[in-house]
Image (cartoon, rainbow, N blue to C red; front, side):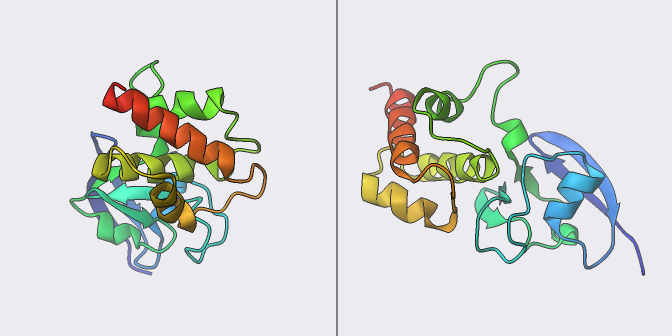
Length: 158
């Protein structure tokens, strides 16, 4: 099968990899670039565990072809913290015990960050709607919603 060379930007840094035309972005991130934060929960875009942003748009990386990353700006969970300082969402998830096994957590954090970039003061209903594509089998969602709201307030300076 023909191999493709892809040049992209991941978490602000230039990145290059070689992939097959049918390889998913999730597989390229994990297997070609060593970024294992995004998880494959379902492979069909139903669970959100593989959520990343591509050019600022929240996507399930299992549904995006790696070749589509050519020239794109990709943000993953690995780029969320700044050096050794956790993002307010990451701190809030710890403070509110909004995670357990951790499989869904990276995707939920990426999705929540995407929400707060678009809507810094969401209602609980808006948070629930935005995160509806991210499934969690361990925590339930109340702690997640509280954590997102807490981080949103911190980020607004409230």
